[in-house]
Image 1 (cartoon, rainbow, N blue to C red):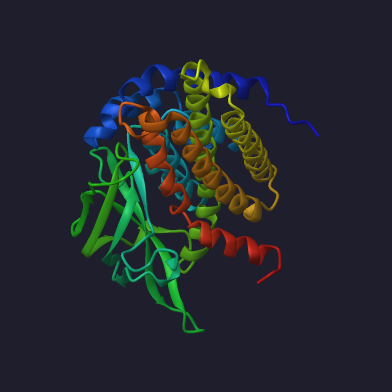
Image 2 (image 1 turned 90 degrees about the vertical axis):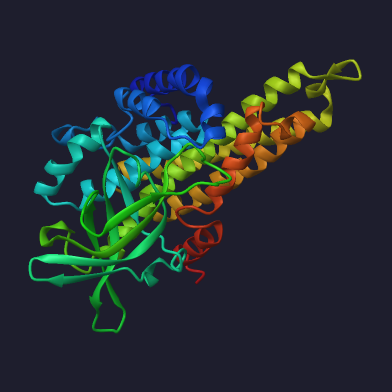
Length: 383
């Protein structure tokens, strides 16, 4: 077994890490405080090639492997969760469904702008009463002549209401199957479509500098050709999209945990009590040792899941495991990091406070920790 990264992947890690330290870190705290999505850093991330990383060059992508995409997301998350969320959702949830399930016309129409970072795209799945029970979506899509008429709402949708958002993929009920279950299909709704409104959400605990939206569809009419893939394949498309999305959430957990460790190690070496650095006290040294151990284990399981995907092997179980483990590792690392900072860890002037808040969504978004355990239980034959 070879656990080494390629030279290209090492170069990518170093370049993204350097970018995050120089361009994102200096503004992250202020953007978080203002709840402000930064179009300037968005443009810089796009110029670095962080969108469409796994997409073929034919459609304007970078043509990289999935491990490389995850490394880039990890390095952004090591500095700031909000910017990592923009990259992760932009690729896995925005670009991913269009790339994997769109027809040639849809790919050529939407992907070049999304891969260049000129535009963003949302993935409309969650609803006020359909979170973990995503198959209970109430948003409807009815075919009327050559138009789909969409009615309903979505909530907590990333990248869906920026001024560069060009549209969303909406999961809709388009009928009833023979077994009585709802027929679910994905419909592409462009920004500005009549009857479609995207509203930015504020007052968030975490990812305050990322764009989160509520979507409203009121007799929204879109062309019949805006159906993504075959009719009735929406649930399958959603599950496939979430498998990839879990890897990017895992990368955010891994990168965030690494960021917490870096901050905690630096502070504990500088902070002195009783005449010596607090890192020298065994109780604190053991916290740092535990963090380092868990981060290494998390990186191994996440990279393995990505390797499986890159090699066209089943990876659903490993994706769920990676998402679950990495998000909970960040929880423990953030907790240790704040504890090592003491009272200063509770102050906004210290970045560890932001990491502590940002972590929580990782246990909720793209499948809660409870849902991941259900998925894993089924895949190992326990349920």
